[in-house]
View 1 (cartoon, rainbow, N blue to C red):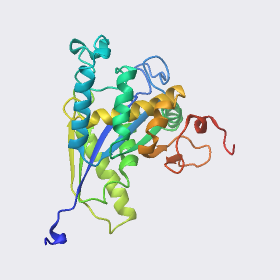
View 2: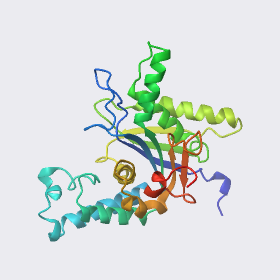
View 3: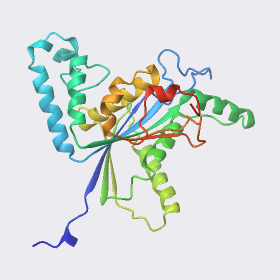
View 4: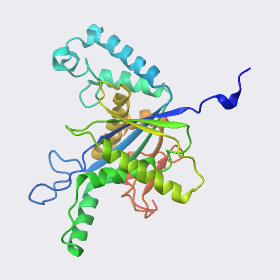
Length: 279
C-alpha cells in the first residue's frame, strides 16, 4: 500500500480570458466608453477545469460531430474557408445550434467560473476627477487589466500544490509580464493578510483558443456574462449559472462600497442588476 504522504499535491488548472477592452479614451482624450466599437464593461474571467485534457477532447469530439451534421453544412461559420467554427468555438461567431451544444457540454463538465466586472464609464469619470487633482496623471489600459487580475486571483493561489494558468494572448505582445506582476501582487497581498499561507509554484502559459482548447470554454462563459451586462439578456447566463462560483461587480456599490458579490447562494440575474437598493 502506497504512502499517501508521497502523493504529489494536485495542480490546479486555470484558463483566463477577457471580454470588452480596457480602453476608456480616444487619442483626443474624449471618453469613448459605450460608443460604437467600445464596450461599456470590462470583464476578466477565470475557468477552473478539473480535467483539461478530458474537456478539450469533449469539445473536439463535439466539433467533429457538428461539422459532420448535414443540417449545419450550409451555415457560413461552419465552412472551413471561413476559419471560424470549423477551427475554434467562439460564442460570438457560432450559430445558435452550435452554441446550444457547447453550453450543454460545459454544464455537464467539472468546471467552475469566476469573474471580475468593471464599469468603464464609472472608471473614466474617476480618472477625470483624479486628473483635476493631479494633471500629470495618465491612465493606461494595463492598469485596469492588472487590477482585475489582482482581484480575480487574490484568494486562489494558495490552496493547491501548484497552479498552471493559461491566458489568451491579445494582440502581438502577450501580457505575460503584466499578468505575472499582477499575480505576484495578488499573492503578496494575500500573504500580508495570512502570513502562514502556502506559496505553491505558479506557471503562466500564454496561448490561443486554437492551441489551448479550454480557452474556448472560458470564452463561452464570458460571452454569456457580457450579454447580461451589455444587453440585459440573461438566458445564456441562466443556463450556465450552476457552474458559476463568483462574479465580483466592483463598481456596483449600491449597497456595499466594495461592490456586489454574486455567488451560488446569491446568483447574478438581469433583474438584480435593474433593482434599486433595498428593493
